[in-house]
Image 1 (tube, rainbow, N blue to C red):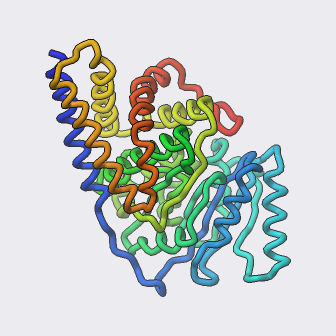
Image 2 (image 1 turned 60 degrees about the horizontal axis):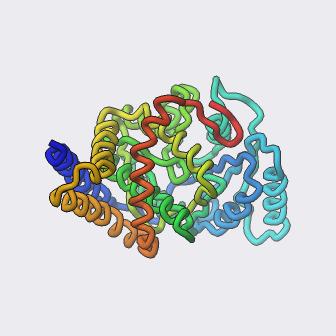
Length: 370
């Protein structure tokens, strides 16, 4: 009986993996440089004194036509030196006068509707943004100089949202497994979006037309969620007016910092798990099949047969076939060396998360509780 259940789970896992590979491999046309839209980059920062300068220096290297880019940094009521660091950075750019300063800082002072935390900070910045396309990242992220240029080039007239892949800096086993976790989850997100059935995205590498944002009524018109990016994705999707795409493109790759310890990783995954409770049925189906597969792997020692071993090997090969081609496209195939760490981590993570979310849905995020 166990063999049959495991076999059924792996069959489902095989079908899913093939779909993920096909969807993530889709290519999209780009517009010419002369037709590039105006862009507002937004970064919401709260108590990021350790990370914000790295982010600002990367944003300062962005390549984009003169006069078509503004960068809005939101100090979301930080209680550390984040605000001062932003001020000093912008002041230095003004003094050097190397080129017109594209940076502008705002402070979250008002609450828009009933919005809280980061979502309110983003809403304040979008309200102040002057340009056609909104592109967001986080204060702990480092973007490539080509990030805005290539992302904006995907905005054909009928495209309302363009998402990008985020990885994490990988320098040891703990950070490396997180890096592969990000890539795997975002390959799933890319595939489902590109095949017309979105289930997730990530806000630190996300862009959309300001017009589309306004058409859904902005964040203030959406139900509160600790994963505001997913809420906005689904709202624009439900308009049935714009294409939403998710290219796997090394020129739009963003690198964030990994969680430094188990505690912070736990809080991150719990937040994602709570936010994931709002996914459509197809998302739950993917998660359920993954849970069943990993549960069978966990129980293998108690019901071992040679067939079970073959099924386990097949599952590992499928994960490699999903991950490695994407890593090569993104230019970070060296991170594949953490593949075994990722496999062990995922076994624990996929089995434990549903129980963690089931019994406690409180989330701690940036010093705030939700």
